[in-house]
Length: 135
Image (cartoon, rainbow, N blue to C red; front, top):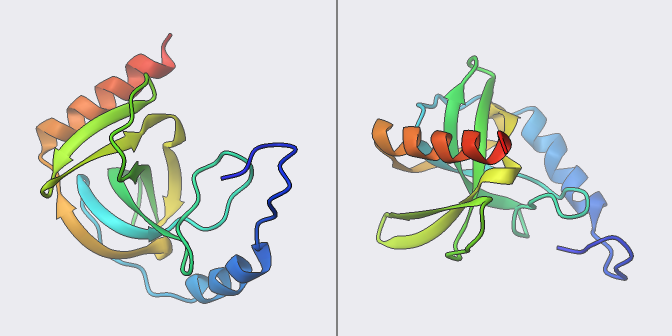
């Protein structure tokens, strides 16, 4: 990721071509607590990007608003420290949920389920999120 003033330029045209295909995709059914590969895309500044070439990243489904819209938290494969990360040890790996990048997302972006967290684990993650934003 590049910060403001960086000389690295992002290829938004490549992501835009993929985004056009995503718009016509059939929606994927989901459950709260599922971890999905997701086309997060190429975003602005320090917003979490998906990884090239398809701009995908694992995300956790925190809440289902409708068949079309869910609340997600992106994951990183690195075990990061800090108030805005929640460490997760599941699926044989340690990763981090990026709490300060939780956002709503259209379900057309979701590709395939790669696991399911327990309701209790999702509740712990939401509690950590609410503690972060209530400071």
